[in-house]
Length: 148
Image (cartoon, rainbow, N blue to C red; front, top):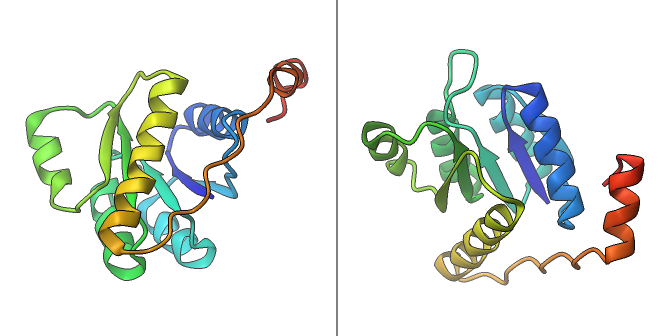
């Protein structure tokens, strides 16, 4: 289960659909840092995909630090903010990694799997099972119906 934190509705919807097509469950997308903390506490996802730049008082870096410290949920930054200063600041929140936009579905899936594997090793816990890869028929149906 993956929580998506993205303040651009079109990007959030695209991520939700792509993740669904890749076999991941996305119970919610939220647009603010405070919303991310609340949803992470309520849903307890296996991973949070977090944009660094968010609308509101709290950015993704501050929200990620709270989520990591309070709930021990791994965070993978999905961002267009790739400057050295941004990455240095974000590294202080101990993310599982960075995925710079734009990216391919394959890069997204690989980054998620690395993040989940790494967090399982770091925390000494069993890793959540990988989603079953959708069949060719499922992917074709999803692209025709618009459902993941």
